[in-house]
Structure formats: structure tokens, C-alpha cells
Length: 249
Image (cartoon, rainbow, N blue to C red; front, side):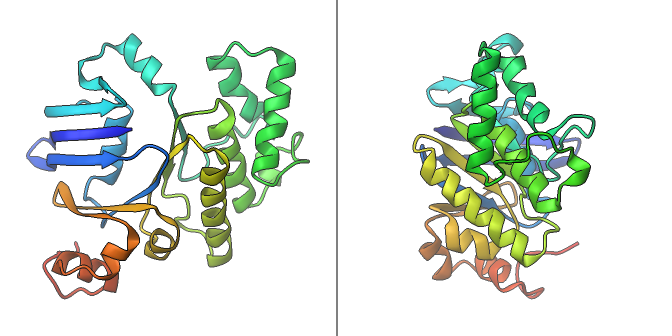
């Protein structure tokens, strides 16, 4: 679904991505992991064409998006839905208005169709009676679920989760993890990408894990590959040890 070929990106003298080769497979739930500063968020921004690489190619399906102008990039971005780290709901809008917003902006659905879709995605995230609530009346977990409903509303082909459980207590984190898996199972054609530090969730729920280190893929594969990895970088990261080749600043 997405492929990076020899992608490099620097900001000033700091090289964040270095000849990165990366593949996201269609229909899978992929976790991208790595310590802070290893380029996870920069990688996501490149996928959506929000950043252009200094060199290399980025394919979304069969299209090299590094060659597209702004108008063509806008069309590619319609393939994506994103759940932001803090949900990013509009406080002045009700739950249903938050979900209606992208549908009105980016689709030609009728009002009746929009209303139906709002109810449909709220059912998917287990908030069937929350249409008229405002964000300040929602719990942290409920805000996340509304954010996910909004991301799903326009039926994206690719769903991005930006550190969905950061700062959550363990119970809410587990609920969000279960919801991510359920959405990926219900939406058969959707490709889900999770940026996360949550190793437990990655091992328990991912079809595939990609670990970034020093601007490249250190290891990619199913969770079983990571539990048996010989790489000292992977072993250090999964053990949480300060001893090893990785430096913690």
C-alpha cells in the first residue's frame, strides 16, 4: 500500500531519515516503533505528502507522490484518515458536528447520508448515543473514540494512529488497542498504521512491526520475529535497558 525507496530527509545538519526502505502492506495492522527522535512522525508526514524527501521515492499504491503537485497530493490525502494523539476535536462543536465536518468538506454526501454515516461510525466505536454531547462532557477515552469515528467517517483506505495510547491509564490503553484491532477486522480493506511506544500493544495486536533506528529500518516482521531478535538494538529497546548501543538523551 505504501513503499519508501531510499528516502532521506535532513533538517539542517540533523539527518532524520537515511536511505529509508520501508513497506506497509495492504490490509494489515502495522506498528512503527522506535525511541523518541528516530523519525516516526517524520515518516508519517512523508506518507501523506506533508513533507518532501531530500531524495528517494514514496509510493502510495502505484503513485510516486514525490512527483505530484499540491492539487494531486490533495487527492492522495483523501485516502487517509488520522487519529491524532490528543483527538483534536473542535470544542465548540458537538460530537456529531465534529464527525460531520470532514464529510461536508470532502464528500458529496446528502445530509441524510451524512447523518447515517455519523450514526454508523459512532456505533463502531461504541458511542451510539453521544451525538449531541460536547467534547468537554466526554472522558479521555471517549474523546479518543470520537476522534477515531471522525477518522473513519469518510471511509479512508489508510488509517493513521499517532501514538493513540500515550498518557493513557492501562485500562483505557487496552480499550483503545482492542478498538484498533476491531476496526481493522471490521473494515476489511483498510490499512492501519500505528505510531507507538507501546511495546505490549505492538506484540499483542500488530500483524507486522517496523522498528526505526538512526533513520533506517532496524527490523521488520511479525511480532514473533521481535521476541526472538538477535539485534542488540532491538533487545535493548524491548528490555528498556540503558545499557546497549542505543543512546538515550
